[in-house]
Image (spheres, rainbow, N blue to C red):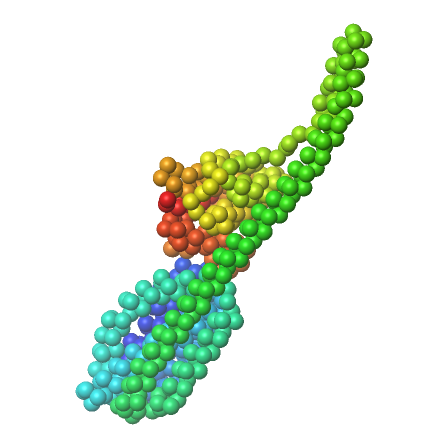
Length: 428
């Protein structure tokens, strides 16, 4: 009975952490996962009972059921497999460290067996002390990691951490119950916990760099779009100036014709000639949206794409030529929101996009983008939106949030009554 209680106490935290971390993630069937995990715990307990009745060791049995539990999450979670494996090894190492310290303390201080009631009690106390911060860390930091598709990086860290764990377990005789009283057993667990923290910190740093790189790539893409638009505008203006030059050259001939019609006393023929002449004059069809050249060029680029897609566009800008924020950052924010809005509109009846931007008296930048959206977007509990083009969080909205936070501002996304609204506020 002592061993069965110990196995239960050391098994349940792994599932608590997993469901707490992945509850808001996309599942193939969350209900099926709950049923299978409950069945898994019951079968593991029953298998341990049978093994104890037969006088068999249960260490190998515990590892086998750990792999079965992992298979349940891998099959039912819609996440990157390598990222899930990395998270599994982190949780497994945390459980190994707590279990190792508990068994060492019970054997060293109370001379009890490794899976006694004393070990179970110490293990339970350690979980009560450490589980809340671990859950908080998993919820608020690890969730950020899953927003990035970096399978190669996940795989490398997973294999590194798994190798370190295997070496520590094998060289400290983890399968021998008598080894728990040795100091090497205890310090190996402390070393393993240090490895966990170090690997986790490295992974956070690496993925943070990847996230910033993604933002820089978005900035480069938006700047490229601006340059493309400006080249097009320059070519159009050059052609327009050439037409004006030709029209000015031909003006003398038109003056002769007008004078001739006036002298003939036939106003109808003069009126017809003037109508034909005015129709042939070049005109400027381009629309300007604001005085800032970069945002104006970007807005004109997307306006052309939006109108070509048959989407009604309403835009209202109140921005000066010079803005107190880096123009590449503002272009990334505006470009991502316009692109997301355009992608949400195809196939809808009478789709529309509304854009409004202004600079307040306190030099705060305010941007609002609305688009028709009959169904709400998928999102997590923290408000991050899930991508419609791939698994995981959307890169565009993530970049907008990150840039807003870097400038001390905020970005909010909400859906209400068939309208999706994205708003960005950057304080002056």
